[in-house]
Image 1 (cartoon, rainbow, N blue to C red):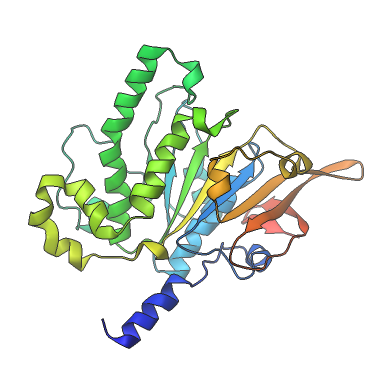
Image 2 (cartoon, rainbow, N blue to C red):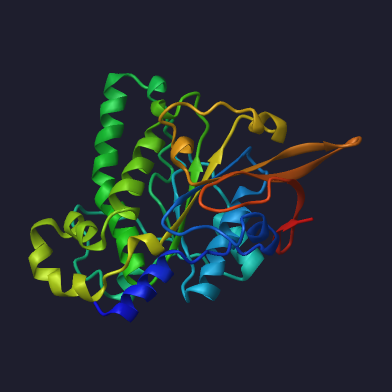
Length: 305
C-alpha cells in the first residue's frame, strides 16, 4: 500500500459520522466516531427509533448507502420501523426474509441477494429475553435457536458491508435487571466482537467456512475496513425521567461500560409540564457539550431545541 493510500485510509477511519441531526452532531463535537459503539438509552416512546432511523438515512447522503437495522425484539410487538421510515423519509424499508433452510446463498456478492435494509431475527417468537424467565429446557431450546440463526446474522451484516453500507442500528434491546442475564446482550456481544469489530476476511471465513477458499478472490475484491463502520445500539430502560437515567448504575462488564458514547433520552419537568430532553453522558475521544437539551418529535423526526 503506497503512502497516499495509507494516509487516506487513516483519515477515513477517523472521520465523524453525522447523526442526521445537526444540533446533536454539535453536542457530540462533530458527530459519532466510526469503529466505536454508541448506546442510546431511554424508555419506550421517547424517540429512540426516530433518532436511529435519522442516523441510518444520513448514510445515503454521506456514504451513498442507507444504514441497516437489526431488530432484536422477540415478544411479537412491532417497533413500527417500516411505518416511521416511510412517513419520515419516504423510505420503503426492505426487510430480509427469513431463511427457511440451513443453507444460505453462496452468491452473496450479488446486490439483490445481499442488500437488505432490515432483519428481524426473532420475529413473532413471543419469547422472553432473560435467563431467569426460563427453565433448563427452555434455555437449551433458546440457545439452540440462537446458534442456528448466527449464520443468518453474519450474512446480513457481511453482505451489506460488502455493498458499501457503513452504519448500523441494533434495536429492540429490552430492559433487564442485569445485562449478564439477557440473551439479547449475549447475541449483541457476538455481533459486536465477531462481526462489527473483526477484519472483513475473518468474517468471511466464519460465513463461508469450508467454502472460503473458493470465494477468497471475491472476499479480497469486497474488502472493507471494520473501523469505518458505525454502530448505534438502542436500549429500552425502566427509567422514564432523565434525572433517573443520569443516576443509573452501570454494572461491571455491562455493555455501557465499554461504549464509546452514551446518549440519554428521557422526560423532564418544565414548570407544570413534562417535556423530552437529551443529554450526551459519555463521548470518549472528543470534547462534547454536557448540557441538557429539550427536543420534540416532529413529522420530520427528532428536532432538538
